[in-house]
Image (tube, rainbow, N blue to C red; front, side, top):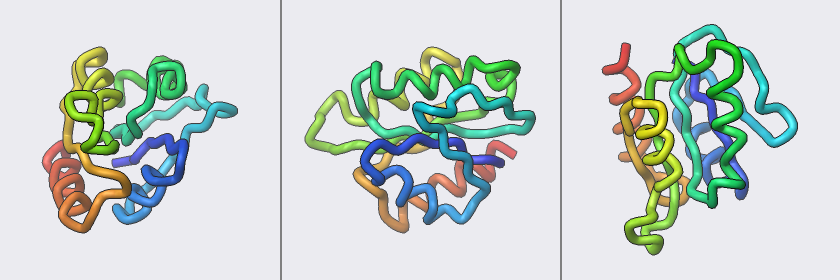
Length: 121
């Protein structure tokens, strides 16, 4: 399964590279990419304006039909706002929230997300 991610400060990028899976980075200059294979999104926690490019990607072509789940990173100091970007995407697109992690995650976070992706098929 492909991992589609965005990273504004580099923390999410560091995390997804630990997964050792097929990656596709979405940036403000390239959100309108067509994909024709199942994917999960891994996103940081920022205000909606900063993460709107992931919505643009998901809504490009038939990408939504391949969107299988989402994981999110953030800072636990955000309290109830921790990983809210991933939670919002899960709710908006009716996909499972697979995992949340702090900053660039740790080995346990990597194991948990890999297991969740494997269970998706």
